[in-house]
Amino acid sequence: AAAEKGGYDTFMEKEIHDQPQAVADTLLGRTDESGALVLDELRISEEQLRAVDKIIVVACGTAAYAGMVAKYAIEHWARLPVEVALAHEFRYADPVVDERTLVVSISQSGETMDTLMAVKHANEMGALTVSICNTHGSTIPRESDAVLYTHAGPEIAVASTKAFLAQITAAYILGLYLAQLRGGSYAEGAQAVMRDLHEIPGKIEELLTRMDRVVEMANFMADTRSVLFLGRNVGFPVAMEGALKLKELAYIHAEGFAAGELKHGPIALIDAGQPVFVIVPAPDTPHELHKKVVSNIQEIRARGARTLVIAHDGDEDVVPFASEVIRIPQCPPLLAPLLAVVPLQVFALHLSTAKGLDVDQPRNLAKSVTVE
Ligand code: G6P
Image: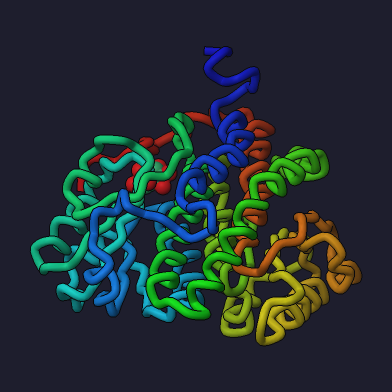
């Protein structure tokens, strides 16, 4: 078993360190020499894809957060509306779906019953169905019109890490392919993003060498009863994922919020010593979102929060209001989730360890939930 863990103490720790490879392998072979995306594996004709007028992502848990991240990116790159639905909610509502709807399921295992039922329902309604999946030959890809595999390798720890990064990568590839099909400046833009994506594995590698302080923080915080997470734009689902990891692994109350929502309620939760992770957008994010989130940090800090700030290298604006600054390498704003989530995974892992809990097999959870 020690060998299977690649010298790490737990599968989760190994899988966190597998992430550069998971992203690189998921990118591999999906572009030609000219840098254009080639997705012959999709087996859906270009005409059918060009006719798509709406995307609905269906998924559960971490996979649903990957879908939420992808929504921001695909709407921006391909100018197609994207909804994200929890699979179990989608199935028993009355979603508006027809032949021009592309239903994209995301599932590591390919066996999650809630997601499978959503895909079957989408098929019955005549939608095109694409599965983003990490497990070859599993049920969801077989029930879908097409599949785009993630190449994260087997994920053993119950809490998902490398599959999440691979899911974002694959959903981005799909969105960029749809952008490419639109031609012109969309296609050029897609190729530029692919070049940026290829730099992400090296940046994750670099980020993983900087985790000592995050581990220390987790060790100090073993008695913490509640942790909040704030993010905006693509940082919002990262905040939700950071909170989910803490619930799953450390059994403490954790909640992720959209930073803009703070003033509409959650700010009432802030009192002295409340730890709050803030995922700060890249400084060049449009619409001054960086500035807006920095002022959120200032607001909660003024109310006594312990601000644990995840910010890009060189972002000095956050420093005056941060109890701790956790640095991630610079990257384009829409790619930041592939970096920003890593310290949150490491934090949850080490908080769980500090509490003496079973990191790989948290109580009450199953790796794949095959009942509705
Ligand atoms: C379970 C796991 C979660 C996972 C979710 C979706 O609840 O505990 O970690 O995110 O299922 O799994 P899937 O295999 O469909 O990605």
